[in-house]
Image (tube, rainbow, N blue to C red; front, side, top):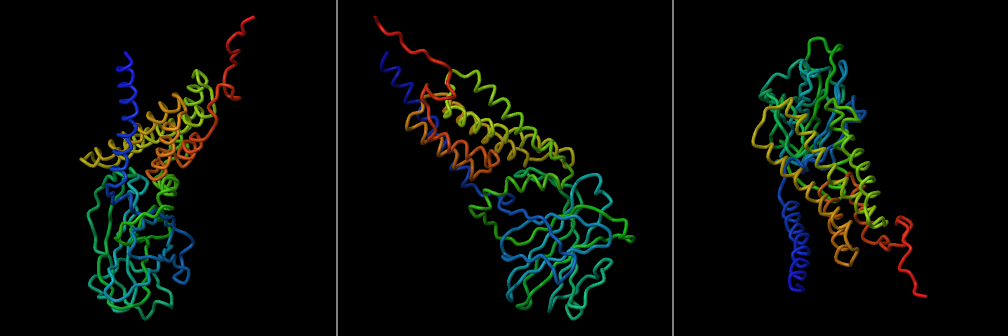
Length: 359
């Protein structure tokens, strides 16, 4: 009997360790779309106030909105023979169906192979520079599995810089009547897919702005997380171990489960705008990873708060932070649970009269 108990305990301890190995493998897999750092366009309607891309080789994705006859400018400092990569896309929202933005590159030594469509009035600072129009692309909506999201690619520029200088990318409306034009566009800049530690932490929060850019409401985006925390509190109230360790671990676990639900929610929403393809299965695997992370943390929070359990919660919290699970708060809760009290005499515990003393 003791042998069977020891075997079961060994199996239970191996399950979280096995999940750690799978999680490390998941985090090590390259994900091109995830490695693109999202940015929001600012006040850059004048070439003198162009939004500067400090590392033009690093992969960035800028999201902006055009209204009327405005033109948005972006500046890049390039050395000769450096690769310049720009890709213009727009939202797959039905409200942007008639929206037709255009992309041009402004700088010295460019080959003007194509006539820029409806060229905007360029400022005096760019009067002596050459202009290169982007190459048009297919206009069918594509599904992005790592976000997940959907968009329509419109044009692309992929050349080597002819001179060492500052170049400008300009996005403007390609409509005859620009005063009545409004829409949402995105601009991919750079090709080197690198995510720093701060990028990994902030990207899940930035995704909220991207989903709003797509036309979603903030309530639709956050509902899975709000529901998850309500369920976590109800789950904690009915739990036999009402300790701060259990509370923090449960909140973290349900935030990870909420991330899984949010990924499925965004996948379904995006598939209403883009066709179903094999990339969808990547999204399913990502959602499964978040769900497995949540279930494992909840099981650890309900059990004994030993050294191994606390260490595992700290490891899972760090992994969740790197994987973008739980909107930052979930990982912080998991890390906090690794050192919070777990005694039955905690303020979170039910009253326990303890063993009766013998007379």
